[in-house]
Length: 169
Image (cartoon, rainbow, N blue to C red; front, side, top):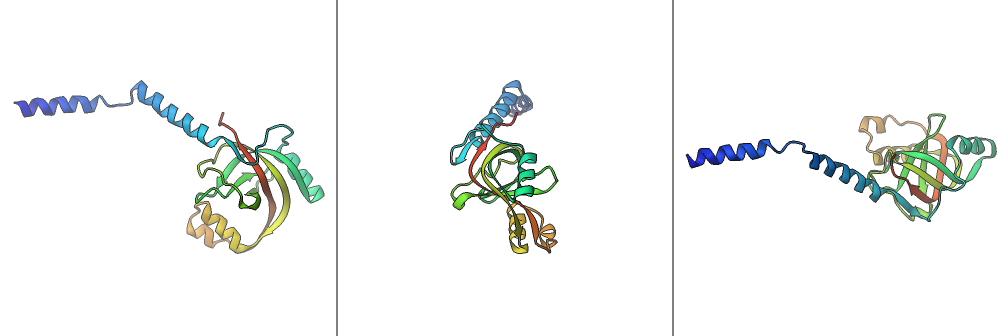
């Protein structure tokens, strides 16, 4: 009888372990804490002042060959190994690879989807096949996608001296 009572009591307590309001609040708190851990300055401390849109930066790079300043965007990809680069989608649909000056700092590997302001210099560069495959591997792409890379690409790249990751809205 005691065994049956113990089993019923255990079943009752286990069945009452659903998503209570306190657990939902805890999940929200964890998300907020992660957001706070990711947001902030990396590399040189920068501000949002005078940051331009990606469209404005792209127009200047295409017309003048380079751009120096601050740009607003959203992180679409990040190196999953150590955060040594990030990718931002440009208005023309291409991905702008952002590396960090002198390999001097990294960003959190979980920062995909966060709004960002970057400061540095953008140029048009040609990226060789080996480097493109390395970036695809770092981004966690499937092997068949990595193997399908068979030509160099010309795209806009950005070397950042500072990165400011903002909180998600």
